[in-house]
Length: 291
Picture 1 (spheres, rainbow, N blue to C red):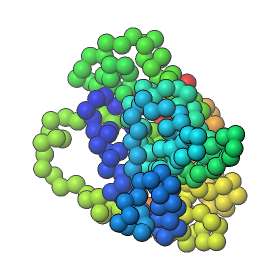
Picture 2 (picture 1 turned 45 degrees about the horizontal axis):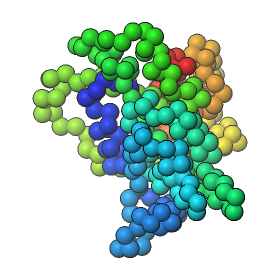
Picture 3 (picture 1 turned 180 degrees about the vertical axis):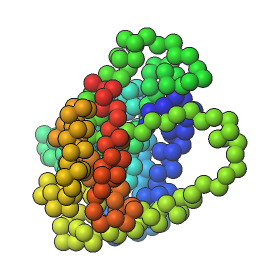
Picture 4 (picture 1 turned 180 degrees about the horizontal axis):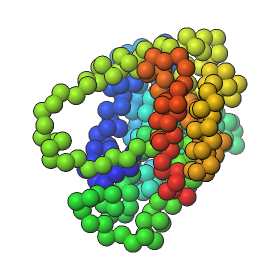
């Protein structure tokens, strides 16, 4: 999420656990094991009942994020397994810390090697990140004047590498809220209703991947992707145009298909339509702005 200060990015991220699908027994066991190793279980519950939400400060070290120590302990990426890892003020994290995220985001595991032993922890998490559009934060705010130069904005955005951004499926711009939007008393869709829709989509995916050893669309490999994400000729032309104009990578192509499959599941649709593809493509908008 990218937007000026006060636009609600952090608040939205912290609300994500309220709409995440319920954990199945296998996920609860995995999560409990990791938290037990880290000494975070309270002994009152036999299994983790809710998905974890981890929000490390931007001063965290690479060892704190990935894990480490003389006796290798799980880091934040493993403590967020089956849950959310939230990185607020993303460009403020040290670049070497952000770069170590690439391997667990791709593989879903992290291996910590020491002289005496090597330990692999699971690390399949949902990454949520928030950032300002520039150092002062107001380059996209129509009511505030930005004081940053073009070079300063470019340097600020370049703190996030292209390979890391390529692994983030959805880019959402968070515009500043107007007074009328803040003051109106119009009822919004409750989180419980959204979560039920998410649960139905996840149940649909569990049936789809029965016997495959995975739970959701995001875990699909190339073989399953080709089997379950077939696209019409019209959709293929749309994807070709997006790949050419936006300079997207092969990884981005696969991720667009996974996101569009999930959008279709949320709507209860059996096939991926061009509308689903178009929505997934527009979530890659920041690929044109970041190096």
